[in-house]
Image (cartoon, rainbow, N blue to C red; front, side, top):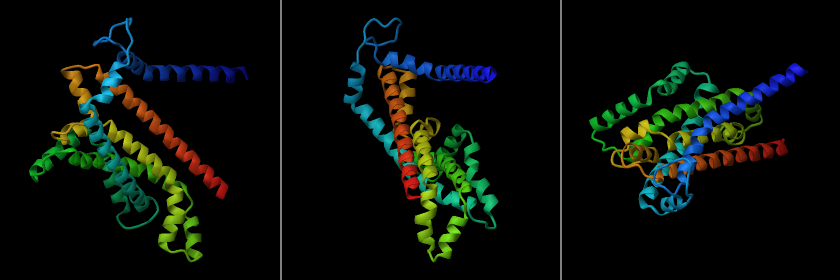
Length: 267
């Protein structure tokens, strides 16, 4: 009993140290965002929230956040659709080229993003397409859609196919089975895939750097400001971005919990 309690204490301390290690840099960024001085110095002599006000009022900040949001939302929606049908294709049905399809759709995950971004940029140039935020959507999808597909496939492998067979035996059409059985069972995986897709697209730097052209996303702008022309808006937008990501995760967790509670009541 004492050994078990000691193990729990050690694991708790270890977990706490890991959390501190991961989030300690964010604490310093948070201090930098509320310092009145242009550059961060410790101890902070004067605190101010003026950089948050300037971020809210800046047209440049509004433009880059709008661009990032458009790319992330479109990538999320398309990834969820591709993931749903792609996961069903190799996780629920047997067909001749199933194994090859599975390897092919997951292959882009293993490519370095910088190499993938450069290849896509050269391909866009070769066919005469000028890179914009729209081409960044294509670039993000090449890398993110396979990840979303893998997430949904894990869920697809876990549920019993006899549920679909029973619905067909009772006279349900393929569309009805898909809508009433398959989609509800895969919904937690689809929501999780959408969450991953949004966060991966929102914070993606390598692919955006090569494929956005004259447009700029939030990670690109933060990098440009850190390399040249540093502004206190950098840590401010960093904190706002992290806070928004945490909020999104909490909302998705709440949606999944709400969905599961409804399913339990129905069952």
